[in-house]
Image (cartoon, rainbow, N blue to C red):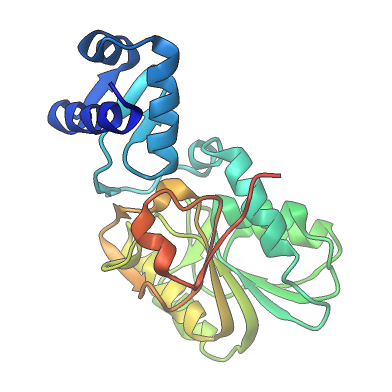
Length: 250
């Protein structure tokens, strides 16, 4: 069986069963384990399926209905987040007035930050502390503390942001699709993200590849309202969009 035909069969089996193990595929296709693993790796790079430990799963839209604790989110995709953060940190200049949204990838941005002469505002208590320890000038908005995300949120926060004008802003997201835009689980946090994003001259969403085709209940920005920095574009349909920067693995 030729590689192209075998890969079509793999996609058909994964789609039909939602997931398949390498062992199952080797038996069904009468191929070696190494051949199946190579096929899965190639199909994953092409965005046709999700390669997981021991097999593959179908690509499908997921729904993120609840926020997770910071520690839990921070442990996910650390290498990908670091690559995104290194690139994003290099965009900040000494004369910038920077908004940094709460989130684990934006947290990595602060770790990678070398330009400390800029002025920063953040709605994250943890981010503010990190920035202050680096010697940065830090401003916090008014509002209510949301414990699970360690963020200051709510209508008071959104209103207070209207008097500021940021040269550049960096935002996190729970999900992104080209039709639903950038989404997050909770209305209070979405309100603050939306308000802050409107006050930024240049906007970036730091979004690792696992967030694509994920949807949360509340949209805070349209898909093309901000530049996207990601580690990898897995789904080919997103390659046509020029506002997405793919940060290569170094």
